[in-house]
Length: 190
Image 1 (cartoon, rainbow, N blue to C red):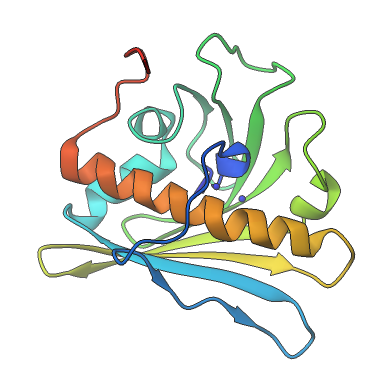
Image 2 (cartoon, rainbow, N blue to C red):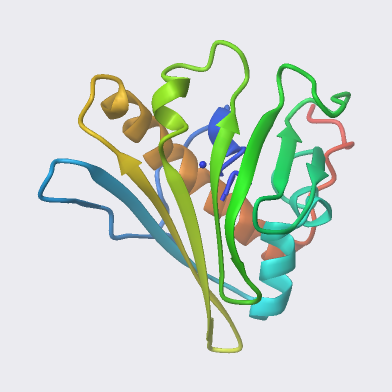
C-alpha cells in the first residue's frame, strides 16, 4: 500500500478501484465489537524471498505500486510513496507508512502515518493496520493481505467500502507484476 501495503496500501489513493477477481480470495470478516477486517489472498508465481523484497523495499514498490518510493525497510522505518512521478521526499501529496513488523520471507505490517491533504477520514484511516503474510505454496507464494481496524465510528464504513475495492486492486497489481514483469511507470498511459 499492501492500498494501509500500500506500502496498500500507499495504495490509499488508488484511483481505479475494482472488485476482486476470481484470482483474489475474500475472507473479510466482522468482529463481535462491530469492527471489520478486510482479508484478501492470492497466489503469486514467485518465491517468498522475492515477494518479500517487492513489498518491503522502495525499489520493490517502484516495480508494481507507485513510480516514486523512498524509505527504510526496518521496524520503525518509514516508506514514503507517491503516484506523482515528480514527487520528492516530504512533498504534501505523498503517503507515508511506518513498518510495524518485518519478518523476512514471512510477514510485513505497517500503518499509514500521513495521507495526502484532503484524504477523507484520514484520522480514522491512520488507526488501521495492514498485515501481509507470505507462505510457500506450489512453487510460489500464498499472500494473505489483512487490513484491520475499521471501527464503528462514523466514517469507517466509507473507508471500508473504498479499501475493500482498493486493496483488491492492489493485489491485482502485485499479481500482474509477478505474472508479466515490473510496471514501467514512465511509459505513456495513452
